[in-house]
Length: 100
Image 1 (spheres, rainbow, N blue to C red):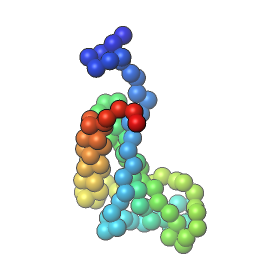
Image 2: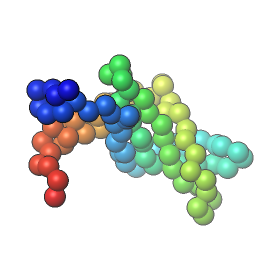
Image 3: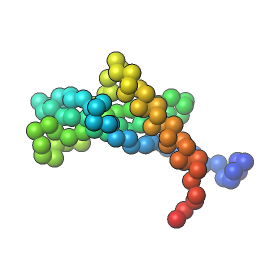
Image 4: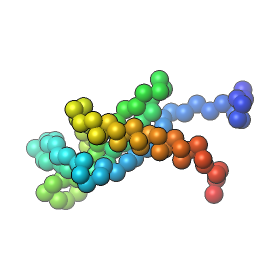
């Protein structure tokens, strides 16, 4: 079956990674280790809503595990960052120039 722009394609997920600016970073503890959260993975859900997880590195240094953290719901500036990242990704995807 073909849609208006070509073949119908079923997407399993659409995600974008965004850097958390220095002034918006926060810390959280997991498994007894404190992490500074420096990046967000924003996913577009099938119903059009966004989901987000934060990732970072151990405050004490070292590699640490790749574990996700929730984004604090009481930080409107982080919600703005998530929305801006989704909008920016949409603009970039919409303006793609095909395969290189």
